Amino acid sequence: MKKADIVLLKYGEIALKGLNRPMFEQQLLRNLSKALSPAGRFHIQKSQSTIYVEPMDDTIDMEDAIDRMRKVFGIVNICPAVSCEKDMDSIAQTTIACLKSMDTQGKSFKVEAKREDKQFPLNSPQICQQMGGVILKNVDGLHVDVHNPDILVQIEIRKKAYIFTEKYSGAGGMPIGTNGKAALLLSGGIDSPVAGWMIAKRGVAIDAVHFHSHPYTSDRAKEKVIDLARILSVYTGKINLHIVPFTEIQLAIIDKCPRNYLTLIMRRIMMQIAERIAVNSKAAALITGESIGQVASQTMASLAVTDNAVSMPVFRPCIGMDKEEIVQISKKIDTYETSILPYEDCCTIFVPKHPKTHPDLKEILEAEKALDNLEEMIQKAIDGEEVVYIKP
Image 1: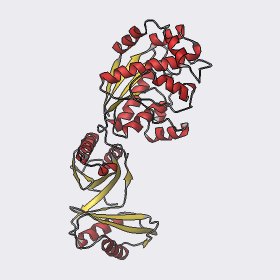
Image 2: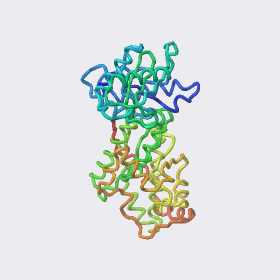
Image 3: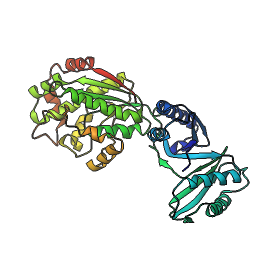
Image 4: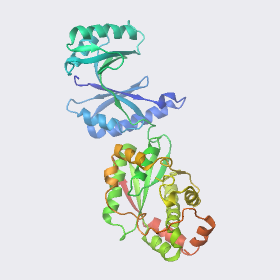
């Protein structure tokens, strides 16, 4: 197709919002502007549930720009278009030029039109009928198929006329920053980055908490988590990654608590630390990558025991998904290859051979009493955190 000179962005459920719709739209425009700033200068404006993105420089790499737009939550469709004056002669000339720049031999087409400007003299069916005839007369090798066309020619009549034949799916969801902030417990595995992405898709800004057990986990394991946060930040915007030293607490649990409760007690203390960091970061909820029944610490009874350790809401967006579904999303968002790098995190070391799958909360609370300086260790871990400020 002829090189696009403008991109039309469509958003979905934002259009269903009531009196606060402008707030969602303005946040989306801000997020879009930030996402595109490394790609060059653009003129961005909104009209009638469509955002117009116009490159200000002919040297801008539009493929790169479109890839960036596809990762902005709130955008449903991305349509690179060619603009022209809104008269039928200009529309016909532009459409013919677009199609002649494509391989059309032996292919089918269909014309769809949307007339937002009701002052335009032809209605949508009339535009389709007239343009279909023009295309058949002027572009060789094409035939009509209204049910399953190879090429869908779309014409929108707005301030100007816009012609496009390609439409890309956006990330969907809600603009980041419209639904508060949550703290993601980010391990080095497959599940937690997916969980963070899924909650961010609902407009929630993300901070992350990672527990590092040096020297039992390597610096490369820490770098792996930083890399995962950086990949996520392409979708979420900036992430403050809190790296918490956990070795002292972990060794105390191993030394003083029943072996079959090690993982659950460790998880409970992680949740308590993450909750305090979340409060300090003005986050209102925690996010984990747990999926019910996936491992012993993720049975329904185990999750209830873990939740008992905190008062803050805990979001588990992967809860009803099987592993393959989670893997597919991780591949889609480009975290999979990093997640499977063979560096252990603190959740995979010191794993008991026979963990409890139906834990008793009273027994766990009693076992935790053996950690007589737990509060001191928790505060020491929080005081010793390293914060990595990550930007996309």
